[in-house]
Image 1: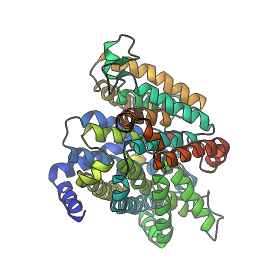
Image 2: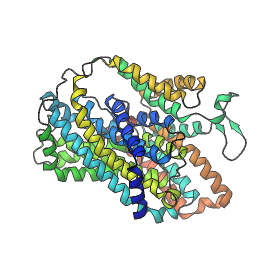
Image 3: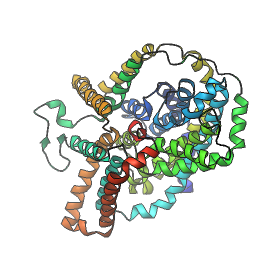
Image 4: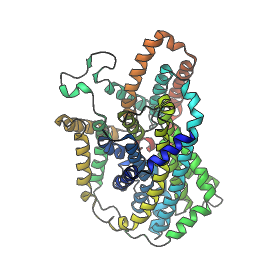
Length: 498
């Protein structure tokens, strides 16, 4: 494993791979500073460009985007009082009051420094999980992976809103959509309605763009005003960096919280953000300034936000179970690149796993430095009307959708899915479970076929299958009974936006 880690590090340092890492970082700037788009849209935008790309370069590109999105989202949160992604919601609580006091520079510097430390800790956690999980993963077969996929959908469903049943229904609606087109084990076309365009199934890029990107852009257009009335950063950048090291134990504790919460399917960066903020408030001796401009209210959630990226990659890499919509898109990208999460990655493609570790760590360092450099220019352009930003975002979305199959059907399907996504957003139906169900649907069907072929009906009696099945049922029952309470503690909108 040491040899694989060293090989991955040297591969990342190759000029082309470093250039791809920097490209991902810079691309993340555009997505991250537009409030509401988030990591899912960022991953989707990259997806059409990785077809045929060298896997190492593609991983560097994705890790750069991931690192930047978790860092740059604090800029709109602090300057505009609008979360760049769901993972920066709690940052608004004290970040925006600090900006209103003329201390935006201090708040941003603290946020970027805490993000860098948290991101590196998340990468370390991912690295440590690989040798620990290898013997466990090797002992699992297709029946266990099938049950883990079902568990992933149900957990995301029950934790994804005030009404957990809606999340479960949305998840299995995604599974149904994944069955459109050819069956994996037989020459059979399903739900194509005689349309040649649907014979190869519904493109993931089009589905994800319609569910997330277009509804968010519609909301931005409706909001329609300038982003901010106070474009200045003020002084105190150096003080913000010092604040982080004065509260280094808070940063470390919240980074651990973020890593753990990111590991849990369905929780994501948004829940980590709020839990870290709550921890900061609960452990502070003087709580009087929280919500009015306490720098600890910026440091805690931002360190957890970035560390959760490493945590969320752990189930994605080790089990092939994405914990959020963004990780679902990333999982699909891995398959496109010929990388198989799970036992194969830990035995035959271990250097790929360490490529993600090094890319995430270095990407976070670069992202923090880039954000330090661009904060002042961005602050000056925040008085520009949001309507000037929308055309650029729409062009990118349309091009990314059309690249799926280069058919007019892509654009027609995008319109239809956008209507579905907008209604789901308006009516309070969670969208990430649908996307995760779509990605896991193909995996579930493949593992079901393999399990039936290898074991017949006996796979249902395997001990781990029974254990995971019981956990799945318990998670559904617990979610239906306590889902509303749990989500009220960690912001009901959290996973929906993530």
